[in-house]
Figure 1 (tube, rainbow, N blue to C red):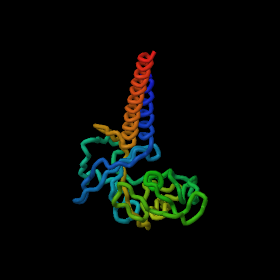
Figure 2: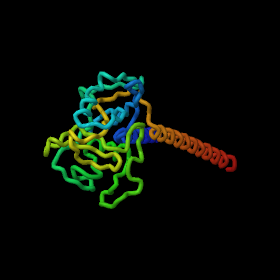
Figure 3: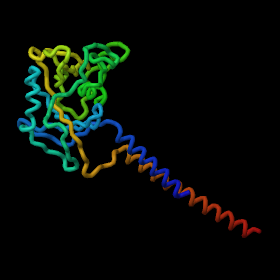
Figure 4: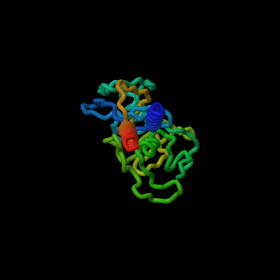
Length: 255
């Protein structure tokens, strides 16, 4: 019985740990010094299947080419201050603007179109809706405005602005345009690469390893609860044994 109880407890903890790991999370793993100030390096462990690190800095509005050049040149301008508990292996050769899944522009609100609201297939849309938990101006049924729409939650980001951000992806349908994401309303659209003046947010794909993994609070709570339950079970079982022994002794004395 004891072996079965321990096995059940261990299985429950393993399943709980796997569930917590499978969910996408944002985690500050250090900072980067840029222009004399420190900005968070925020690990996004599952943005449409990719592990990426965001730099919490919004570059001033400019055209598409300038923003791409700014992001690509960050590597030589950043001084990394990674927390000792983590290490990064970069997959991208350089910092870049967020990517968007390209296709014929179709505006909508149900999340299945290339443009519009509730689109999470782009890295910026996934961050806004999935990781940060924000709502677009339209809900997926076309109702508007949603209560609490817009940039209500910024998570570990301190420098997001309620404006539009360039994507690094050009629009194949018309190469003078590129994709953008408006974080003010949660809307994905197109803008002219030359005439458009839009903010820049940089990220870089990479694998983050924890040198000394620390159990998440939820896992620790389950573990503690399991130990408390086990202790209670053992006390109850011990008490039952004592009660049974006392009852047997009483019967023998009064036979």
